[in-house]
Image (cartoon, rainbow, N blue to C red; front, side, top):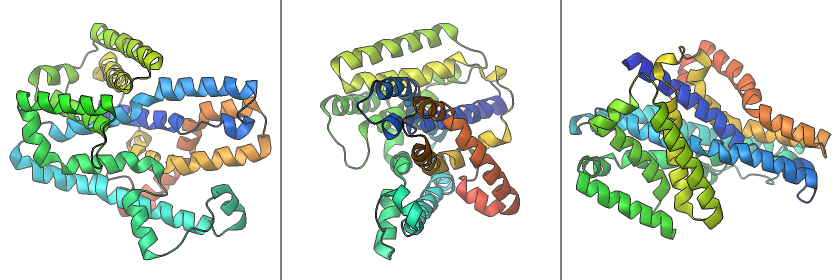
Length: 342
C-alpha cells in the first residue's frame, strides 16, 4: 500500500487498540454487585468475554506496531535518529504523565470526598515519592506498557544485530518462549513483551512478510486461518492453563485483524484518532472515577454496571477529545508533549 495508506492504517489500529484497552480496565461487576450474586456472575462473564476475549489483543498489538515501525527501514546509521525521535514520542510523555498522575493523587488524597474515592490515604508529597512515581509508574498503573516499551527501545543496539541474523533470531525466540513456558522472569523486561515487539520487528525486516503486512488489499484466507487458530489456542490455554497458549493467541489475534482489514478500504483517520496516546494516558483515571461515582448511586444495578462497561470507551473518548482539542488549539506545545508529538 502507499505510505499514506500504511500510516493511516497504523492510526486506525492504534486508536482501536486504545479503545479496547479501556474495556480491559473497566471491569465493574464486583464494585456494583459484590462477588457472590448471580447477577454479578452474569455481568462479570459478559465483561470478561469482551475484555479478555477481545481486548487482550490490544497491548500485544501496540508492541507489534511499535517494533515494526522502529525496525522498518532500520540500519545502523538510523538507530540514533530513531532513538532520538522516541525520546519525544515515548520517554518525555512517560515522565510527564507519571508526574501528573502523582500530583493528581497527592491533591485528591487531601480533599475529603475525592480522598475517599481514591482510597489510598494521604499520598506523601516529596522529591523521593515523586521520583519513585515517575520511574515506577506508581500511580499510573497502565503505563507498565510504556515502561516496557522504553526498555525495549533502549535495547535497539543489542536487538538489531540479533534480529537481523536468522540464527541468532531463532536462539532469541527459543529462549524467550522457554522463559514464558517456565515462568522465568527476566530483569526488568517481560519475556512476552519482547516476543510481541521482536515479532513486529522481524516482520518489518523480512521482505516477504513486509510485503504481506503492507499489502493494500485484505488477506481473508490467511487472516481467517490465523483468527481461527487464535481462538483454538485460547481454548486450549483455558483447559490447560498454559501461559504460552495465551501469548500465541494474542499474537495471532492481533495479526489476523490486521490481515483481515485492507488498508485501502479504510477512510482517512479522523482528528480524534490521532489523539490515541492522550486517550490511553487519561483513560484509567476516568474509568475509575466514572465507575466509583456510578457505584455510589446505582449499587446493585446490573443494567447500569453492564451499560457503563459497554459504553465506557465512548464515554471516555467523549470526555477526552474535547479536552484534547482545546489543548491542541490553546497550548499546542503542551498538547504535543502530552500526546507524544502525534
